[in-house]
Each structure stands twice: as C-alpha cells, then as structure tokens.
Length: 122
Image 1 (spheres, one colour):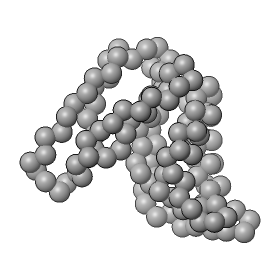
Image 2: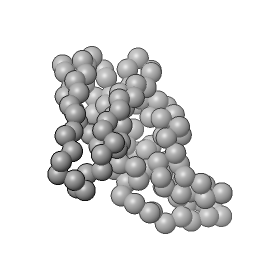
Image 3: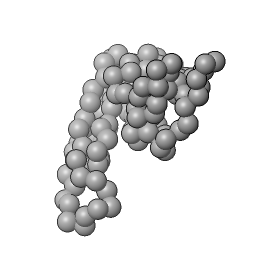
Image 4: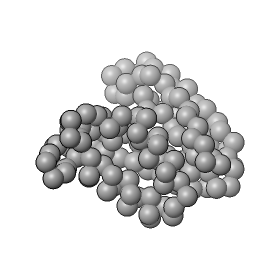
C-alpha cells in the first residue's frame, strides 16, 4: 500500500476523506536534457484513496463565455465534487465538464493541447 512515483511538471493529486492532497513533482521538462536526475517519492496509501494523474491540457484549455483557461482551482474543485461517484461516473462528468467548457450555445473553443486525466481508486 505504498505508491512510488516520479513526475515532471504536473503534480499528483490524492483525494482522501473528502480532502484533496497535492504532491509536487520535479520542475524539469521531459526530453530536453539527459542530465536531469528525477527524484522519486513514496506515499503511504489507504483503502479508498483516489489518485489522479493528468496533463496540463485540461487546466490550460480555453472555454466559457469569456474564453478563459479552466485552471487548477476549478480542476481541483471538480475532482473533489466527483470523488464519491463510481470511477465510470467520474469519467463521464470529467469529460462532459471540459466539453461544456469548450462549447456552449454562444461560444466554441478549439482544443489546444492533449487532454489526459487518469484516475484510480485503491
């Protein structure tokens, strides 16, 4: 029940007991240097923990009436709001949320980057 991870740029989120915990990763950009030594971290997990990994495409996506970025605060709030649903339902809500963010009755914003969110429950 230990998660070992390394990351670059994007944080790791764990939702436990209705709280979202943020775990930082290295600030190196992948692929630009062979000399970076990425750190490795370990996190003790508990049954029921929800672990989320994601690219910056979700939070950087433009949308809404004013064409603003989705941003991390809104993304964290979304993850907390879906945490008590099944993983299938979470996927549906997360996909629908970004789709609605990009396209509405009076606006349409093209996808600007890859959008990947991976979530799993311990």
